[in-house]
Length: 148
Image: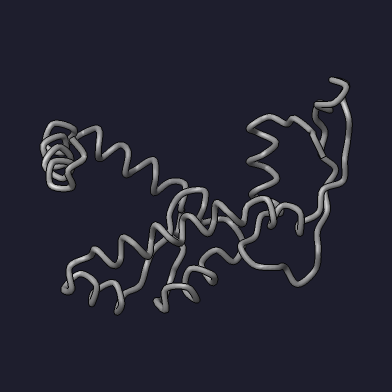
């Protein structure tokens, strides 16, 4: 396709057409950008199947990271997660069927936070408010994992 698009357009495509699993009916959208072969503006029709395929590798990496994290989680916490489930927050939580795919891959219930984008903002706010205490926690965790 060789079309350069901006971050805003990419985010819009992800939110409108991105899906972790095939959709019941295929969607399409006209996307404007710059043709990388000749540098001229161009409009192309993009399908939800193409978007799903483009996102597939990243989604699978996220799922692998979740699985590795769950493997390293202490048994008491794993039992709580198994019972209460995983809560998705952030923009990725809004990708259609991501919760279903993650649930299928982990065997755990997966929920989407009430306001997933707002959760990230509030979490960042809380982190910044308590940055000094969190620095020592992060440094200790890195030392423990031999990241230094």
